[in-house]
Image (cartoon, rainbow over all chains, first blue to last red):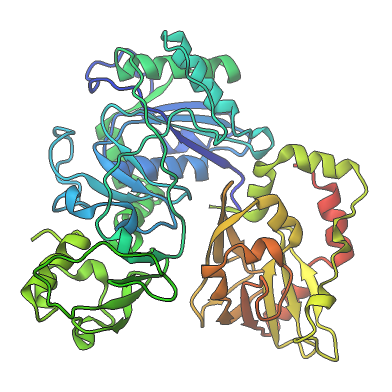
Length: 351
Length: 176
C-alpha cells in the first residue's frame, strides 16, 4: 500500500482548563467527500470529539483521503489516555493497573472528559508512549513528502506559542517542542526483556496560556500564514459520530484501533522472568515476602500469547497458548493465592 | 502506513536531491564476499522494486528471498523494529508483508511479486540493526526479510521489476 502522504504527529501541551466555548466559527460540517476533493488544497480541522480512537481514525482517514498535493492541519484533544507506539509493549510501558477497569472502552459518548478509566491506545505510527488529557492539544500536519521537514511544523507551533506570549519554547534535537508523558513506572518492567521499541523518557512542561481555544487559534493562524488562510472546520462530537456511522473507512479504522488484538497482541515478543537469566542478567527487585520461598518462573509471550512457561510455580497446562490480556485473574491460573495476587499487580489485572 | 519509497522521500529530501546530482558510488559493496555459505553454483537473479524492495529468484523460478535495498536501509536510518508476516501468508504483488520502524519513520514492506511466505527472518526481531548492516544479504545472519514460494503469477510479476542497473539509475534520478 503506497500512500502519497506524510503524517506528522507531534504533541504539545498547553496546560489549561477544558474548552467549552469555541471562538472559531464553524462554517462547514465535516464532509468526507470534501476531504478528498482535489480543489481542497489547504484544509484545517478541529475535532471536538474526545474519544482518542475516533480522533486517530479521523486522522488516518485524512491521511488516506486528502488530495496528494494538499496540506492538512488537524487539531484534537483527547480524554485521558495513554497512547503507546506501534511496536511497543504496554506491560513494559504502562502501569496498566493504574488505568482502571475498562481501559479500552470508551464508557460515555460525550460526557465528562475526566470521568471513567484512562484509556489505553496503540497508535498506527511508531515511536514512544505519551499521556493525553483535556489540557493537551494534539496537532497533526499532513503534507506532501517533498515539502516535508521535521522541524518546519514544530517551529510553526513555537511561533504560535510565542504569539500567545510564551517565550523560551524551541524545537529540540529530537524535533520535539515539549514531549508529553507521565512517570507511571510499570511494575512488570524490571522482569521483562522485550523486543520492539522502548520509549525515551522526556521531561514535560506545561505552557501557561489561557485556554486550549486560544492555542488552537494561534496554531491555525500560523498554519494559515504558511499555506494560506482557510476557515477551520469544526468536527463536532455529533459530526464525528456521524462519520463513524456513515464513512466506512473511519468505521474500519476505529474498529481496528479498538480491538484488543491490536492493543495487546500487536506487542513484539517478550520474555518475563522472576530471576536473572543468561539473556537478561539484570538483577531483579526482591519478590514479595509472602511468595513461596522457592518460587521461580519464566514465560515467553509472542504477540500477546504465552508460548513458553518454565520454572516452579507457573502451571504450563493452564497458561500455555493463553493470551495475556485474556487473563482476568491470575489466582485462577496458578496454585498459590499469593503468586496470583502478585501477578495481578504486575500485569495490571484489576481484581 | 506509507511504503518505504514514500517514507524515504519524507525522511531526507535534501539527501535525495543531492544524490540526484552526483555520480553514485554507494554500490561498491559486494554481497558475494559475505555470501560464501549460501552461494549456489547458479547465481540467483536479483531484481528491485520502485518501493526499494529486492527479490532473489532461484534458477528454477520457484522460490525467492525478499529484503529491502541498501539504499532504503541507509535512508531510513537506524531501524528499531521489524514487523514480520506469518509463515504461510499468501500475497499479491504490492501487498504488505511487513513493516519497518526506524528512528525516522514507519514504512510498509510490500511484496515485490505474488508469492507465499515460507519462512521469516526471526533474527530481525531481536537484532533489527541487521537491516542497516547487511540489508541485501540473503544468508543466515543477513538482513533478508522473508523466503517465499513463487508461482506463475509471481514469475510474471518478476519480469516487470528493475535490474540492479535500472534500480541504480532509478535511485540516482529519484527526486520526489
